[in-house]
Length: 291
Image 1 (cartoon, rainbow, N blue to C red):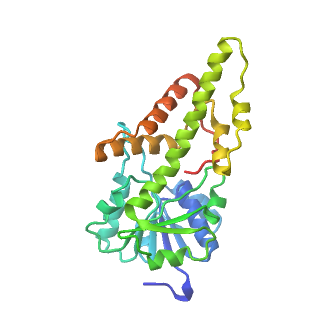
Image 2 (cartoon, helix red, strand yellow):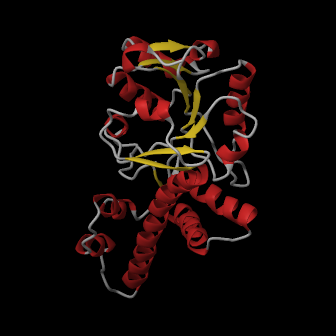
């Protein structure tokens, strides 16, 4: 069911920050997009700017593909909560949806494999890599486009959707793509915790009468990647926000429970962050690092 003239009919299910940014980027590439959410306040600003929106889930069914941009928040024990994602997939299945279902929400490896087991529709993993400080820009100019399928082979529909975007496209199987997304977020968490360890050491030196500025130390170290260079700017407080805390803890819990291995460096980063949050609070300003 491909639309004429090469452009696609697409649905955004979950029109929060990521869903909005992704959908607007897709419209900018002349795709026909309907934004869906169960909360009208998420849709109102889009509607005022002329985007097509609907509170009715059925409006997303007459499409070539739907992007699942729904929350996967932390459970009380730190695990990733997949309930909303699973409910949406069940609704699509009950409606006999025949387009491509695209998982954009951040999920632990093996999620897509499990969810897609009994699906009739194609299921693809395509996570976002947007910074909270420049969502719309990153959606239009992605640093990378990951397309994960059951066996790692390209999906024709999703390839067409992103064909005119300027970001590099990487194909892989479900687990590889899901793990890349976690690896990117958790790397930011580990690096921030490293700089926070240096921050704590400088505080100890201050008590001994020496003034050592952790920010000057960080600036003096020439990190070659602009992405990595930006990380040190956020030390001095725990990393906060909607992605790094939940993804770091969920990744640690997933590896421990599913693989029987506690990732020691990730666990240490998490513990440093809890310590920093208790003593210095959270850094909640818009982040340069991607989520």
